[in-house]
Length: 423
Ligand SMILES: [Ca+2]
Image (cartoon, rainbow, N blue to C red; front, side, top):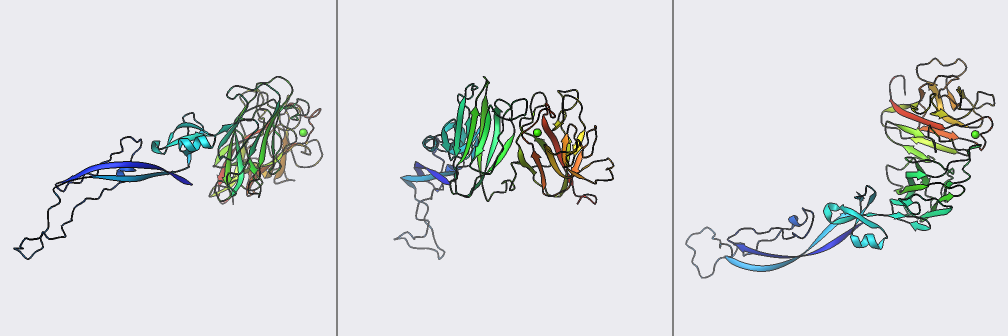
């Protein structure tokens, strides 16, 4: 989609002695290049007409010199066009490049220049009770950038900006609401709820830096609702959720069935409300975490993140009482060292550099309080070569009395190049 600024350029020029004048008269404009491109024709008879009443002395053609002195007014309409592309606003937020008028009509606020100064970077920021079809809208708490300490329900309705939108990506630039209750880790005070797309687990607590992909549905508008429910005790809440609409045809669309989608050879995966100091693993979770397979990479190694807060790492604490050491647990059985209720599913996971137990070459579910693909008190780097690269996280609705103070997981991942041992 493009639009244009019409610039009336009154160019006064003089042709004298055959010299081109053609200078840029658009000093009133910021930017460059566009007006310089205006070519002004040189007027005159071009030498193709013989001067009448003059005898030709020679046979070769004779040309008239250019018109000696001629002044003209020349008015030009110069059309300056630029795409409604993304731009970085002066505040650091991302916006869409457009004219001041269009930004105002569409309900945005101008925040710095773009398109070499011809456009304004238009930021869309909205709060409770509104709806948006603008790509890149920021959904913020009431009173943002101040915190909100109140109860209620704050909803944003997201309407497709174009019928060809397949997914909506939510980036939690700020996300601090009350965490789950401490017994069973259920979000029963504050909640963030996504409805209208595919089922999304309700989350709460601290989720700054996390993201979600929401299936936008097949309808041409298909509204998706984002709701922050705040209730219970006094709490300083703040959120700023960037809502990006993703067309079906783009290469940056997430794979189907991925609530989270990571790209790049390495990165960090965290469960919602993960925080080594005080985060509590959320109950009632069930979702897929996908890592885009980069070219010439055939597997992924996962390692628990460093934990600089606790004496014993809580970077992978999914079941058991993590106030004391808890070994890793694996598999889907109902025994004490299995993962019947809460687990991270790593397809055919195997420890790197450690001999596997004879009864199992690899495992799928991992839980407990130590990250390892076999029963152990020692954490290990875990390798999975199942493609596509995907993990699933599942928790039930119960924690106490067996499972206490678990934090969830934080894993660093590194994709592994294809070699003879890794196909
Ligand atoms: Ca549980």
